[in-house]
Length: 321
Ligand code: TXA
Ligand code: MG
Image 1: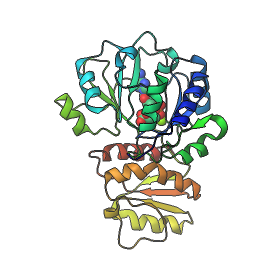
Image 2: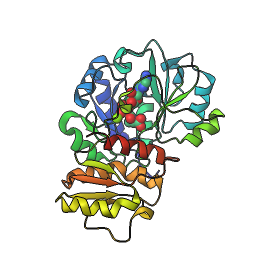
Image 3: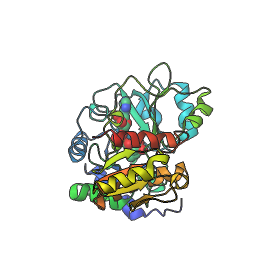
Image 4: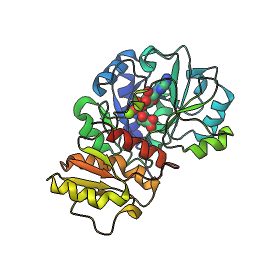
């Protein structure tokens, strides 16, 4: 990945975590706001900083090879998924081991576990040795940060240390697969695609679960600007109308979906494919706010591969008004 790991920064982060503090950490998906997953006081502070309700569970990030310290009754399919996708953008929901405090599970009997693929945070996990609870490093309901600068802007002094690992390479959150019931189910689409899951599980994994998770609330991932989903064929006309209403607009669309002539709007991102769309999405939504735009006109990619996660996040952002 080309990211160099600074051992002094990792050691400093371990100290902060051991002292019950908060560290922002890079992952391949989005930046996380990390606390020692067994320190209940640190977890309370984490929830307070995020402004997150206490009954919402957070993902515990673990070093490679430590699954059985955090989960019990792990089904064979979960082991195969972990084997195939860890380290990587997959979170497994499993029955929790006794050491997992209620504060990370929102009182549930399950826990969300993930081994992230970023070299800096892998080094931190190895050095720390324990589990790190880390929700995305945004305030509750807002856009996840994908750069260290976005984390600082979002959280300011509320975090003791920000580990800078460069821009996130995937750009949308992990895929969450619930393996705590009879059959695996996708609770949130993300960095691992439906086809990749199917190849390991041996059949399609249904999307949608019985457990409500906060990332699955309709209102989520939203900038201050209003997000409107637009068909590519309507984009030019919609941009005209918005400008005529004296609103400031930005456009987010695949390069191939841009019309030849587009009225004067801010081009937030013109990704070449769905992977680039995922990588650019949250940065573009943040830029819309930084530029003080009223509206983001977004053409969603085809909901295939990682395009499914992009479309899901755009729909939630659009549903926020
Ligand atoms: O890519 C990611 O997953 C990022 C990076 C930092 O790892 N993390 C992330 O965390 O997106 P957060 O807290 O913003 O979203 C975690 C999601 C929530 O929707 C939460 O409800 C769900 O995971 N979750 C965690 N534990 C769960 C559990 N035991 N049962 C059901 N859902 C769970
Ligand atoms: Mg989040």
